[in-house]
Length: 243
Image (cartoon, rainbow, N blue to C red; front, side, top):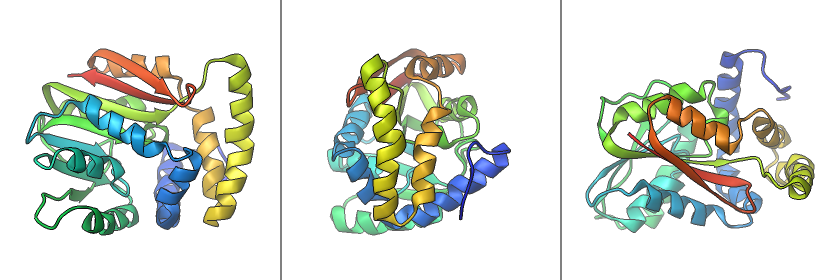
């Protein structure tokens, strides 16, 4: 399948993203390790720390994928109650298999659920914290996605967003465009056998907001005290807001 970017309509993007993740599901974790130089697990662990989930608290992982964030939470706190929602069933099937290998049989498991990030199938104030990892570039309405996350988190609970972002230092910014925009898609496309999917990755960042703009969007839906920290020379950011 060959796809041009940008998309002609929001619906076209949503359909492409769903089918693309279904196609790369089997290599998704491996490619994450390659693209992050093995650092993506540490970023997810930090995102879980920033969620500040109370003991026995309820966590929602939006766009749970193969479950790395959700499983990081349960590995850090076996008492947590974790729900993962995603619209790509193939990714969650792999996440469930990974869960069976990583977690003791008697430990609480992830509640895997099909659903849309723009229409979360949960009541208001149902969770103590909401997290997402590398999702926001893929939704068709970033503000709506954050508004839904704010809706389902309790007052005082946190919304945490882990996402790729634009580096700000001029020399590194230019070098990063070459590495991330040209070299990395060729390598990961070859390794995964899905070059089209890994052309989409840099294209999705090119059309995405920067870290300050993402902070402003979070504030616009009513999240308070929004801040962020950057990692990997300013190419990855974790944003945190409070309901």
